[in-house]
Image (cartoon, rainbow, N blue to C red):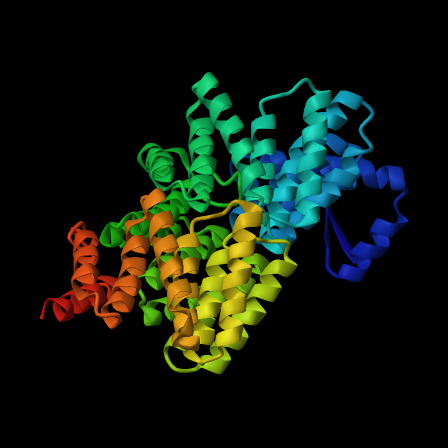
Length: 495
């Protein structure tokens, strides 16, 4: 059943191959696997990336543990690039097990450091940045860095821990780490480190409500980082420029530049499609849906949320899959399917929290409050607002405070006319916080609510003057629902 051709054998039947293989002594098998790996390396020297699994198989079954780890890790990294996180994790965990067989303690630590970082990158799309397993990998990598004398990799280990705290909504801790990363990057003047230093600082500044500071950091990343020149920098599990364009979209809208915000989000979507990295694409779809939700475009939010669900489902991205249900539910409620929409939002928030995530929860409770209000479930809507404000105070994530206070005022009015003073106080607080944040769009929305209330109290001129002042500040976004609504109210108050 075998035909000898020099030192090679071609098996006509798989069973014959198995019998022959099992008849070899273990040591002979190891030698043959080692030789097969070396021969394959020589033959496929220019196409090794296409043969990583085969090379890993042969060296894993040889005595060359170092080569086995090399090719298993490369196979894992390659799988991550094509958004196959489960395959990546299998290869990387096998490599980690093998690394424990290395006799040199220093080499063991160096190998494990690189593997722990890649394992965290593989776990992130599967379980979310906030998962305990992700934090454990980064903490182990940090401990190894301390043992090795704080090597350069420590920057990205701290970056990974930043992502964990940021996604959990622990903004004070995340902001401290971001500032530390930026200081170190600036001291070294290393371009890649500067990109991540400004990225982490910008994302934190946005959720903390420091919008002008956020814009400065995000603008640095957008203007400095060119993935066409450097290749994608996916050390944090997403492309920095795409992420920065998404947060620039939400930041610009908040600052009062609705059209520029939309352009930034659309650029982010286009770049993510070009890069072809699933976790990056799902992330920008989520941020772009926020921009469209701010603009009150339910149909666009629906389309983006459905696309996010599809990408997340195809690639097993549990974090983004849970998150997609929230804007999808809001869009359905806006389009008349209130009960289904509310159910999806509740389900999305529960699943999102189950991943350990907390970033953006005050915003999500804004969406829940709006959907419940539309269904006249006013008590649930008020509870949603209260929960959003509680989380904001607990985490330090104040970006959506103006909208939460405004919604609270609207819901108090919807319950009945007996609490006009409390509603007015809520609107005034929303305006004050919006001004502190330089959040012109939130300020406009809250001023419109207050002007409408004052008009009903025969304080029309006062209402008109305050609304005209903020409306006249704007230079773009006049086709958005907020500016159209403000203009209609101004026209009514001027008659």
